[in-house]
Structures are given as C-alpha cells and as structure tokens.
Image (cartoon, rainbow, N blue to C red):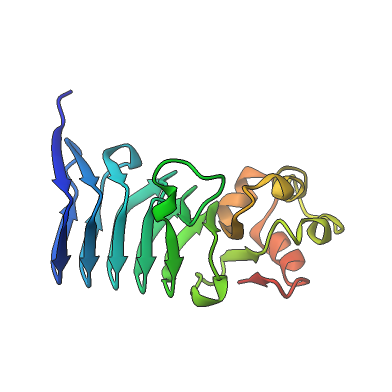
Length: 206
C-alpha cells in the first residue's frame, strides 16, 4: 500500500480545524510547529500519526477511533482537552530520555470527556490535570505508592499483574489511568470488586 505523506512543521497555526482521518495518509506533525486553539480530529491508528517537537496550546482533540499505544511524550501540551478513547498512551516529559522526548510536557489539560486505559503521565504535576471519572480511575504517584498498594488484596489477577509491577514503571511516571471494565475483563474480576479496593486509597482519583 502506498501512503500519502502529510507534513505540518515549521509554522504556527491558530484557530483551525485539522482533520487527520485518511487511513491512506501518514501524518507528520514535526519540529517547530505550534498549534493554538485548534481542533484536531483523529481517526487513524497510531502507526499513521507521528508527533515530534510540537507545542499544542489550548487545543481540542476529538479521537474518533480508539488511539492505541501512541507516544505523546515528544509533544508539549498546555490547556488542551481530549475526547474519545485512548489506551496505552504516554503523555508528558518521559524518562529515560530518548530522541524527541526533551520536547515533552503536559500541564492544565482536561481528560474528563475521554476514556483512558493504561495511559501514563510523566514528569508533570498531576494536580494541574483533570482526569476522567469512574469507571476510569487514576493512581497518583504509582511508583512511590507501589508498596502501599501491594499491601492489600486485589481481586482477580489485577494485583499480581498490574500492582506488583508498578515499581518497574519508568521513573518519570507520575500518574496512571485505567478503565475499570476493561481491566476487570482482562484480569478476571469485576469493576465493582476493583472499586471496593480503590475506595480505600485517597491517592486514587475516580
């Protein structure tokens, strides 16, 4: 299959709507690009979307198909809003450092209209972020809290698979958000059983 390459770089775009929806296109949002108060419609897989060295200020992202395993840690986001389903995505200033991650950051962003599962937030102050409500839940400072989280019995295999591995997350991880129904299905429990444990911790946002 031949893909059309679409480039956005070396400019500032303001108050525009960008439709990144053609599955036969590869979208490159590259260096020295700033988007201000733009609406971006995403309806392509992560393999069609390349973001590196971009500043998103006050933008809205409408994710029309689930975006899986996309690395946002090469972009800086301030005052942005996300809508739709995202899973396995990384945001913020991620360590260990690799090419492009020096550009990463996130602050004052709103995910309350998004459905997040297995998403990580790096090198940021989570207090500036708005996370989605239940049935999503967000663990703050998961590495520092991993021992405390491991001290209690979790339902199904969630504790053995997810909680016991929190200390192995990248050192920059400041928050992790999960979607309880998907986690329950994956680890042989129920969302209600997970919530019973989640309610015991004041550093889990739900």
